[in-house]
Length: 372
Image (cartoon, rainbow, N blue to C red):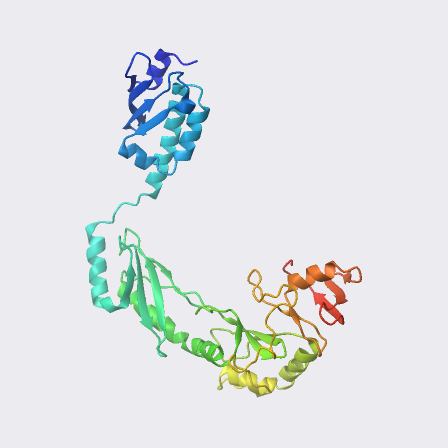
């Protein structure tokens, strides 16, 4: 039970303002700092109906903790226990704000940075935050593609190397010589080394129908390309050797993709690193890749035959009925759930045998390593 003496001992700077002791005003102390507050109690002195009035400093520090303070007030048995709870919340709030607070760098940080950007050229700067702790620089490769270099500077700059972030298919390691100009130069050298890779990927994106990824980044090395007849090929290109034979995986009905696999094995000797990757794929597979504008919807059904959607949790339909008269694609998870619900389906290890939802012909689902 709270007594005036115990409250005075715990909160010596908080004093009653009337005889009924329904109004208290004073200060709460945390981490050596005093914060002004005023507490209005009802006549029955119940905390659940009390009001807490804070100074603007205290209100700013407790911003985000309003619900917690209200909860503590609702469940505190008396004013002293509430003040102890409030002090604990205030200590946590102050600690979190100190951890978030970043001291400003010294003046030489800014003078050195401004001088370097001036040397590099202000036209290269595309972004800087209010503290100049994060800046973004642009550069063009020999093919006219624009690339961004993001630098996160530390307070000890230029004595300490900044963190560098780029959209590359390979790691970008810099040799720090206390110069952003030098990092930008290393960035340009790296761009030149990856020019052929991006030329290869751009040609594929421009001249074929890329199913995945929908919006490829400069770091993406894989492409899933439509072949027609509900078949596609997934390639993964080596950024360091972009004109060499990539990893290939055919997706579609067996009667469509098996002949392509045979052609790939038979014509592998025709691969010429002097030609573009796309031209080599055409020569080796003996096909022309249809562009999206040419490939009609009737020739390449994009949507899953079960959920009638194309994208499902990031996946696109990659299971196809092997019946040449059907060829309907399905999401793996949709086909898995469908077959699992049929009494006539059977499973052997990771393979499910059942009937196609469209043509009722036999269909086989081999589940991948990822769980449907």
